[in-house]
Image (tube, rainbow, N blue to C red):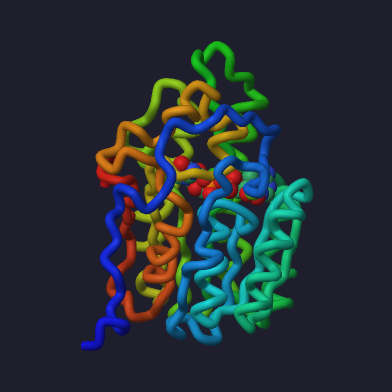
Length: 299
Ligand code: NAD
Ligand code: MG
């Protein structure tokens, strides 16, 4: 093989920024464009090879972070993509939609709050209309606020976390199921928090454990219908979820330091996992949770 044909070996240790990071509080849900350093979602690096040609994907939380990395990768693999996000995130979403168009695919943004069943239903209806169906559903949007004591979590806070992370995937999946064809896939974004919960993420960790049970149960229910259901369990990833209250600002300074790689993951480093799980080549993978945590945590 010619030297120019070789892909350079990449040392994961020094591929991306390491702690210390500067404190950088933002209001929820936060913008990727305001982070320092700005996360890498694969904008310049992800190269597709037709793995999802003609597929139709709906990704919640597709404006930023892990969902944006999946959206860029899906488009470059040949899929048309609808992203959902909150109206405050339109500027992040516009960047993603431009990249989807640049990849030669159709990209649509449907802003709206997924904490009501009514909106979840209409999101699925609108997405299916724009794409001419849906065959990849990525339930990725999430809400995370660190709180030291259970005594300081109001019922309203608890409700927001549950509605966003547990009810919305239920409502969206319920609305999508009647139109998902055989061969379709559902992908959940869980977390290492499902397996090794932090003391200050009491409510969030419970929702991420629920996401694992969602995958394991639904895979059994939908296997006989030819629909695969899998999940991803990331460790610390550099996204606005974390800097807008997902961690206390003190913990942002050394975010990811405790992992064997000594740094947080970047969303781009997870994109190929979402592609792999969506690709029909992975036809025997269902009911699985794929860890991506830099060496710590389960599974
Ligand atoms: P992110 O902030 O980039 O993405 C989360 C998205 O959720 C937001 O962009 C927003 O569009 C969406 N969202 C939140 N509340 C919403 C609502 N009410 N209505 C509609 N959309 C809403 O952060 P991320 O880290 O990429 O998060 C994506 C997923 O990854 C989440 O499920 C999160 O729990 C999970 N996760 C993240 C990490 C990490 O370290 N970043 C680790 C494990 C799991
Ligand atoms: Mg966002």
